[in-house]
Amino acid sequence: MKLNEALQHQTLIGDGAMGTLLYSYGIDHCFEELNLSHPEEVLNVHKAYVQAGADVIQTNTYGANYVKLQRYGLEDQVKEINSAAVKLAKQAADPETYVVGTLGGIRGIQKQAVSLDEIKRSFREQLYCLLFEKVDGLLLETYYDLDELLTVIEIARKETYLPIIAQVSMHEPGVLQDGTSLTGALKQLEDKGASVVGVNCRLGPYHMIQALEEVPLPEKAVLSAYPNASLPGFQDGRLVYSTEPGYFQKSAQALYEQGARLIGGCCGTTPEHIEAIAAKVKGKKPIEKKDVPVKQPEAIEVAERENRPPHLHELASEGRSIIVELDPPKRLNTDKFFEGAKALQEAGVDSVTLADNSLASPRISNSAMASIIQSKYGINPLVHIACRDRNLVGLQSHLMGLHTLGITEVLAVTGDPTKIGDFPGATSVYDLSSFDLIHYIKQLNKGISFSGKSLGQSTSFSVAAAFNPNVRNLNRAVKRLERKLSYGADYFISQPVFNQQQIIETYEATKHISAPIYIGIMPLTSLRNAEFLHNEVPGMSLSPDILERMENVNNDREKAQAEGIAIAKSLIDTALDLFNGIYLITPFLRYEMTVELTHYIQEKTKERQERKVTDGIHII
Ligand SMILES: Cc1cc2nc3c(=O)[nH]c(=O)nc-3n(C[C@H](O)[C@H](O)[C@H](O)COP(=O)(O)OP(=O)(O)OC[C@H]3O[C@@H](n4cnc5c(N)ncnc54)[C@H](O)[C@@H]3O)c2cc1C
Ligand code: MET
Ligand SMILES: [Zn+2]
Image (cartoon, rainbow, N blue to C red; front, side, top):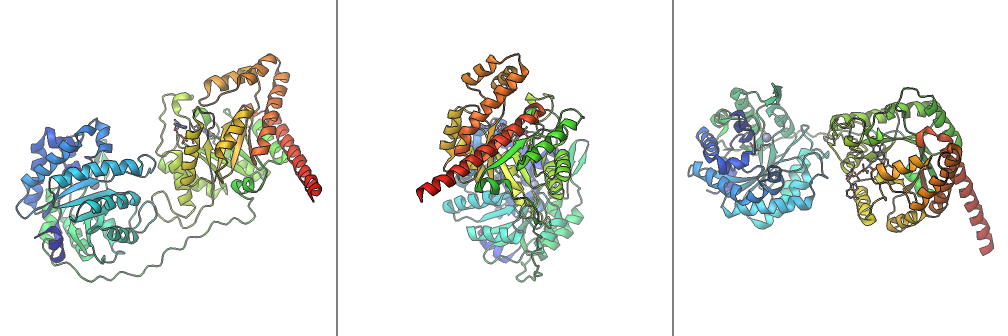
């Protein structure tokens, strides 16, 4: 009987974990490579599961794809590893055992880390190897990213009529990380052509049963569940799972009652777990009717924005907008910073932006300073958020904190690496890149956490992204900008630009983009400052002409500052014709410089408006 047919009449038992079982024997490297170097170990695991009563066993190929094998330098052995895996599983199988070829998900929470194109290539290669060895079906498991799973099912369905078992993994019971409900996700998998749809890994039986309680029986496909043995514990530096086959057996009965027809185990499970569930549900006639309580989707409160200033992307879309960076101090004396913030507010800037430990050097927390200047001076602060210093937990918590403080303007950057900062030995976290951070902040705007859970309320962040025109290949930087836009960026803020021609080129290269760009202008303070920026700050370059002008006023602080302002003004003259948004960067808390430039921009803008009106009258 074919696998599909068998699933119409009876409950089948899947196998349990391969990876964690091998790990518990002390094996701690690429598990899939063992198909070649230690085939007997893999064979014994398969045999133990068959002996325990598994009807469906899976090849040891969870990570046997180009992308994952590359991490071990084994990417050229995809074919050998997969083909050996199928042979080993078949060798262990009884005549009535089904051997399914496993293809594991690649993406975790980061979408940006591996592109769908790379995933497609890698998946196809592994798929062909498994199909060539004549498996009885395919098991696509541990997919956190629904887009990824839908993409690969489409590929597999074009290549084979064999049963496809498609399983997602959830961080939170009942929802995927993008907030799609489990029911909605399984329906999409079914519609794409999966024969069995279900869940595996990450959660133990308790949460998996809870999640399946809300899932109706699929119309065409059947349900599967491969829970972990338990939630993982952490002991002596290792992940451990509870080993209570009796509890797992009881859970298998509950999964069966929720309509699962293929029940196996994922991480932490052993042949004892499989033996226990086989004793309870193997061969049982599947349930054909299931009542699912009608659940109203939780209403998400929309964040209140009454009496709030317009978002910066709105301002710059409509007309002139000036934002000024004033970075929190590196030392604890804050007087000058607050004086600067007050002066900038009085000068009429639309926002004061606060960097997040730029150049990877610690400063007073920008959210603390932003909150103070907001409440004390009525400033609309823009908080930069670097992915370098906070992991996923810290980032989400930070953003929830900013929302609670009423701070809605943020700039999402990957962040300068720690190697260049005060603590070269510190880790750069980079759980996310700026792309993913933009995406997840926009997810918070829908009231959904990074892991897909409802937050009960939506945030209302306006998300800026960084744009660096100071590169050799401007078109590549523009491509990055377009990708940031596709991840949800509302507008862009550029690195400071130091020559007029570059401002024009930047405009020409970006004029097709509808999102506003705030063009960066930073007044220079001295020759040393200019040389430092030119030679030491990644990506920044000053024109020879500007370096020469600063050299001419070297050793005179006043003159140098005046020359810095004059240079900035001439750059502003060019920028005003081409960009609505101007982003001034205050050097060394010398706010009098950016206040002066703010007034200059305001005057010039006014002159231009008046000229426009006059010109208009002439035309009429
Ligand atoms: C307006 C603005 C504000 C900033 N504020 C901060 C801050 O508060 N804190 C801080 O630490 N840093 C800050 N930075 C610096 C920023 O993190 C780095 O300049 C970074 O390299 C570019 O921005 P990103 O982080 O969005 O990088 P992303 O565009 O996300 O790029 C990530 C990495 O990819 C690489 N990369 C970037 N561009 C290219 C390219 N064209 N081709 C190939 N590879 C590329 C680089 O290695 C980069 O680090 C800011 C930059 C700007 C423009
Ligand atoms: C990381 S989920 C588990 C993958 C695979 N089925 C294994 O048990 O090794
Ligand atoms: Zn698992």
